Length: 218
Ligand code: G3P
Image (cartoon, rainbow, N blue to C red):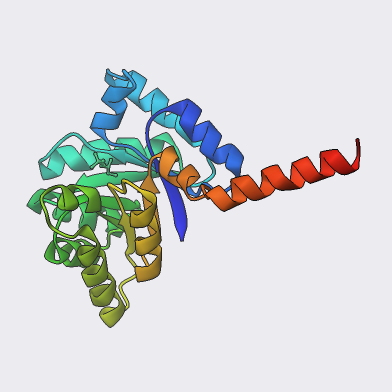
């Protein structure tokens, strides 16, 4: 399972990269705005900076919602750095744009996926990744993990190569259940990745080991 970090915060990206388990980064316009990044040139430079920190794929989202606009923007984003994956919303022109990018060898991440039908269309169009937002489904009392299950089944039935990138991951149980289902990738905040480490028996066990060592060596 690949671990992506879902942030545009360079310090958090560096911290996850230093841990040695980071496979990529996802961003979106809200995450860029949260870091105070605005203006085309600043946004493009920020993507370049992220690519310099990590080795893996970095999703950069188009703002346009029409086919021509998405193509123009996506081609430019892809030209910024070989690690850039163009993030395109799951709308009609988005599916057309994904097909266009796929035919040209430009990798894509189809975002804002909330149904198996959207994921099927995106895979048919040749998306590299689909991003089902599981946390946002949970927010409206709909089990987001069921969607991951449904997409896994459909993709396996037909051997689609599109990778399931579980997004809007909010806590460690989301991550672990996505791993059980077989999501190819999860993207979440640094706190979720570090949260996997937390166990009181590890903490108390280590404290005991260190105390016994200190006593024996005093
Ligand atoms: O990867 C998608 C993500 O950024 C959305 O997360 O927590 O805003 O639903 P959230």
